[in-house]
Image (tube, rainbow, N blue to C red):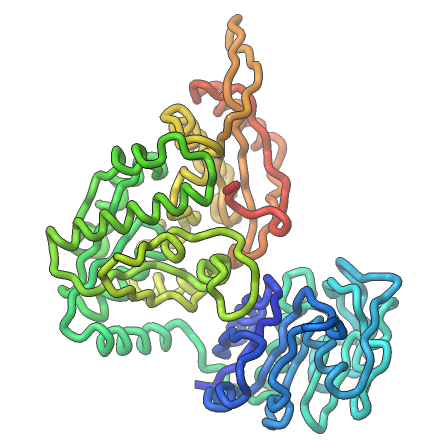
Length: 510
């Protein structure tokens, strides 16, 4: 299968480049910036992309790619820092600008014959840089400019090397996907062969070869990721698969009943149910640090898996619903991006866990997983269900977990979801929930003064959870949500609405 390789120079958005290339039905992988040219040559990609990054190309110790990459005869596209790498490598100059560009900028296209094919004479693009090319290298010509960047896009058509100062991978750049498609398909000649049906066929074959006659234990939560893993493995190995659902007591309201029903009635998959609520909550008692919560939950999950494996096994493999964003945000991506948070199914598993790990969705994004699930016959109501964090309400209860705070988060979140469904908004947004911390405020219920909890409502729109924007809900809907929470949820007196986007915020509070 044809592929494009993205070299990660440290941008938190390097994975988004991969995501956009895949939208053009071309397979794409993310590698560290210093991957040797001989390794990339063995992979035989159709083209190479240099990502953005926080460094200055002229600074001491700035990350640089293997120079032999430029001799491989492969098309190269440099984005932001990657653009500056090209300029610097071929004798141009990059300098710190007096007027930095951050945010939207009007890009005027001077030449739309290849990279900018079908993009017209101009688009709005997203800039995020303090450095810029002061001198364009010999052999390169300017393809586009902005008011502050005279060489916002350059190209050497003979070598098929292109550099752009802006970020086509973010949603703020108009028709950025078309630009990346132009590079992948038109310039690099990659065939659009990547789709989810072919992924299913390839993965089923790989799982059968890897697992052989072994037995697999799949941890499921009822969410789309783990359910898709279960359905995919069931297709691949059938009765060699057993699924375990561990109720850690931090689920959505009535979720444990819905999960059991889903697996038994809709998917016909063997499900082992474990009620571990008391054990999880006992270990989490008095813990307020979110990273410690995640580590504890991951460790306890592993303990529960081992117990199940001994009782129902033997099993040789543990399957998990780890996705590409999980891997990247946990700081174990192939590039030098910083750790944002530990995911319990990546960073929380102890070394003594004897089961081998299988993660068939490890290189998929959330919307790709939904497509796979649909093809595997997962019920539509689950396909449309909002994502839910593995640690559950542990990351939506800020501070120490208490029965009251867990109950408030559970009941208030149900109200948020119900009202969004009633108003026709649930399927339009990515995620919606209510969180609660230790902040309290005075309320008046009837004639009685009450000192209760502040509930934070969070509703966001996103494509793949790596960037998100807060949803502008109608005021009357917000009012209805607030009234219901303060009237129906005991101990809740105030309701606030979160209006921070990602970045700089995260979707979940912890």
